[in-house]
Image (cartoon, rainbow, N blue to C red):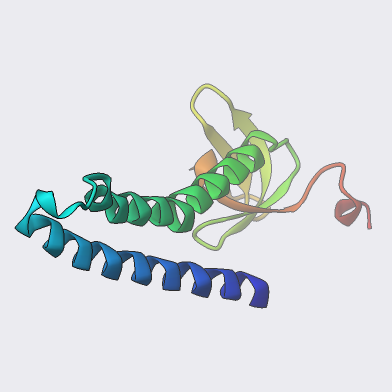
Length: 132
């Protein structure tokens, strides 16, 4: 966690430096193009901000979504799961075409939820946790 924070702090410092360079460069460039500043210097801060935004926000979210999609696609009958509303249940039936599952939450209570609402697999049918 400390290494990640150091990396993040360095990235933020780089962003702040790039923005200040961009601001001072843009005001200088708006006065005159004949001063010798290239046009790409005006675009550089915007590109840097988009790149840092992608690294800090979009890319981790895509990885999280891919991991969740893998979890949902690996569900099997008999798996014990936790859904996003905090309810624990055991998968009774899967409907691949409707993307829904039936969960048994007590002896006579079965609920139908979407597969995307599964937050965590507590124990899988073939896992070590269910064999104990």
